[in-house]
Length: 329
Image: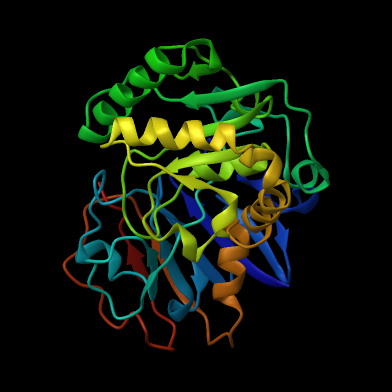
């Protein structure tokens, strides 16, 4: 088995549930998630690290996968050049091995975060549950999830749009979200519904999040605002686009979806998209695809919380030496 050290500053997310049997294995890769292992074949940093870490690893096999969009966080060269490869939706990052791609953001449906500080969560559904799931009975028409947060332009736009939807559709749409109508598990706001209005806070190529993936996992049909090249990832018949800058046009499109019974007409495509989320765009599937190449000589690498350094000399050298990784503040 290929040993993959996976470090992340999102330790409260129970991402091991995204592997079959919760074993931390995908294909020929064994993942060690935020584990203090001293030796690995690949080291993947998912967004950042929370504390100093060290391990022996080939420097060519170090990978950064970004976890935030450009509107939320910048990843400067002093940070990204510590890694041999960078997987991201940030097209303006300067790096010799930049991979523009979706970044395998973790699922939210099927889990309850009990205590983020102490990384305590309840897993209600995992990879195996979603994989075995067939068409669900749908007792309700349509839902949308937002929050009362309005500190970014994207938040404000989304909140205003949801208010307009509620004014227009009334009892035909249920609104969920923090500060509005909270649910512990997103599954309860998605699975009973035929349609879900999925609204990203940020719109960039290759950037789609659990706001879409969770809809497919919960067996609903997404009416979607966000990623402009979503067609590169999912079949066209598995979703309908709207533009929340055109509220009247978006409402007409939603009405068309309901009138044309697109949920019923697209059941096979929803299942196809769900399987893509499970088996292709899953973080572990993404990483496994990246690591299937010859493994070079190992050397000591250190990941330490602190200020970015101006340079990391010889990070592609094959001889053993100590390298320090500094996470972004």
